[in-house]
Length: 108
Length: 55
Image (cartoon, rainbow over all chains, first blue to last red; front, side, top):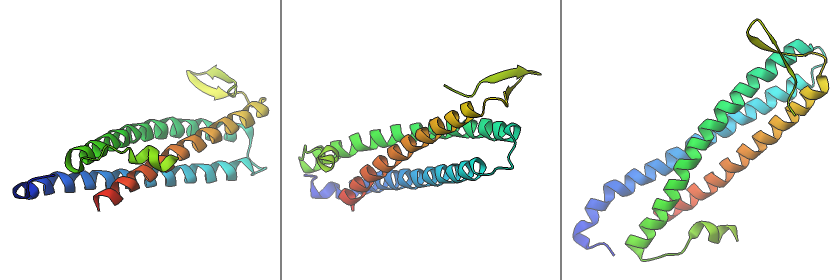
């Protein structure tokens, strides 16, 4: 346990870490929305009989570029989330003497 | 397999005769998006566990 005199020192990193986690979640929600927009756009193009192969090809290329860019960005945040999970397990170990892996526990 | 591409004027352009390739490409892209959505869902679940633990 943290000595009582140190509790104020832990407020800053605790709040900092909390903000980090919350902003990662918000970011993931933004990406999810972007994917849904792409899917809807794709569906409307695919079901439109008046679309020429040329236009379809152009849309496809643009969407592929979007997909690659989005995948890279999601990968970046995904790595950050992995680091945050490690840090949280470490925090539980250090401050609560608890070595339980709360993430794999959930998946069982 | 991706939609076949032909080179013209230094730009890639799609050969319009390969509609089946296009359908195939669309299918692959959709499954790629599904995969990304799954990563997002798992990460959000994990982040919520942290948020609850810190609350």
